[in-house]
Length: 95
Image (cartoon, rainbow, N blue to C red; front, top):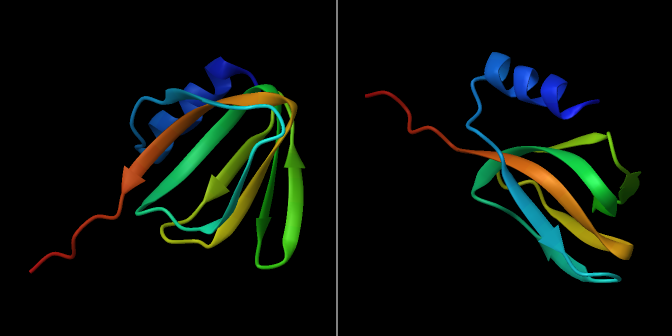
């Protein structure tokens, strides 16, 4: 997926403008959650995400998606990773 395709995808999904995230070479994060939903496009390096016991490796041009509060762990490649991340906070229910 190209950056332009990713930006169009985000617009269709009504997600905000992405920010560039960089993580260090051979770094990792243990199991955690986020208080947002995220779509991200890897632009450099690689990231392995393990969620519910299933690990998937993402490399440049590949997009990953994590739901609100989805438990997962992360491992970064030998060159680290850079990705564009668009985060949407969980919307509050209507009264």
